[in-house]
Image 1 (cartoon, rainbow, N blue to C red):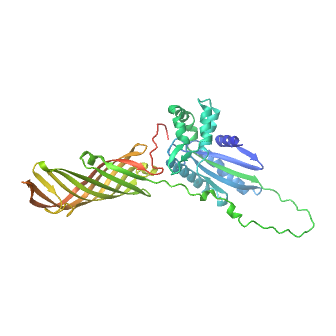
Image 2: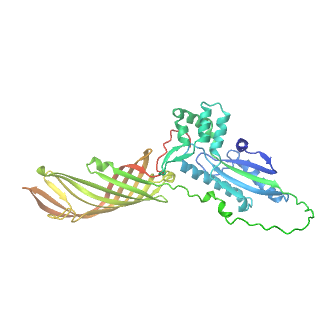
Image 3: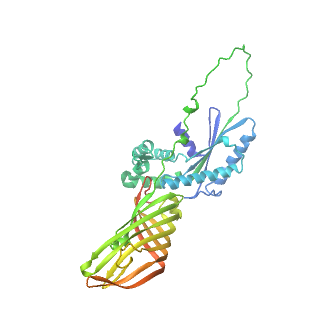
Amino acid sequence: MKRLAIIVLIQLCCVSIQAQTLQKEICVRFRVASSVIELGYGGNEESLTEIVNLLNEVQSNPDMELTEVQFCGSTSPEGGFLLNRKLANNRRTNVERYVRQRVNLPDSVITRCESSEMWNRLSFYVEQSDMPRKNEVLHQIRETPEFTYNSRGALVDSRKKRLMDMNYGRTWNYMLREFFPAVRNATVMTVYFKQKEKPQPEPEVETKEPTPTVEPADTLSQQADVSTVPEKRNAYMAVKTNLLYDALAVPNIGVEFSLGKRWSVAADWMYAWWSKNSKHRYWRIYGGGLSVRKWFGKASKVKPLQGHHIGLNAQMFTYDFEFGGKGYMTGEPGGDIWDRMNYSIAAEYGYSMPIARRLNLDFSLAAGYMGGRYYKYIPLDNHYVWQATKDRNWWGPTKLEISLVWLLGHGNYNVMQKGGEK
């Protein structure tokens, strides 16, 4: 019966009668990566008109009863999981809105599913084909869990990964070419209805005292609601280092946390304390900063901490540089380098792009105001002679960043596509 249901789903406009219940299914087609209903695309106008007319006919017929109207969004298996789930839900919502604007349907008959049986549909096409390694592919589709997590909640295996690794990617590319065009870009709508049973006259029976029955007290508690099981939440954070600072012999490290709704907060710290006192060479700087970022663009909708971002950056730092007989430092002369720090407040813009499964490259530039006080000095006879005091009031770039970003957390990884249409 499961195979029969799959065949009905693929063949679309067919009616099956089983236990006096009739079933009608249609498929609404969408363009790649789109959730907009186009009536002139893929026979959509004929399918939607047919199902709307059927719903109106069933509801106006006193001998018929509408039992269920199911809406299921669908995408193909080769795209990213988060993007596919959002796309499938948008397609399902748009089809439901289109139908319910034209037919008055009670909420009691509406059911929804995350996506139609895309793996079952793929299994159907594989089974009907003569593709290489067919039995091995069918085993992976039917027996391997879609996602496998370890005891710490980290993703360690998946059905899609095993199929993509099979035969060095040749098996996946074959299905990508031969089967996925028929699987992807659709939303299925199913209508269930039946003929009302005519009431039968009850035979006269001798009246007896009813036997009292006692309902178990925990009847309701025994009915498990799958929808209440909490979904494992992904965690998004990153550790990074600014490669430009590293190239200037300034070790640094930063962390960034996603706050949800495409917001994040980042903090960084740098520390360099190099000196060659005998030759009067100093290269000293340390300090850090905070950034609050808002992410936007298509990439940021797929996964946090990637794509375009804008934000505010604030820094505090202190330094002591001395080359060629001239020195520049913050801090009071004769005091400590911490006595007076410089600071900056700036707006920033950047873009973060994936370069590996757990690595991004983040480019960003901050520009704004830098203030504070610094001092000029010269080294003379093992002493450092103060020359001038300067106040800094700088408007312009305050930070340039090309950072290597290491993605951490459950679900925080890049899906590196081997090619093919999404």
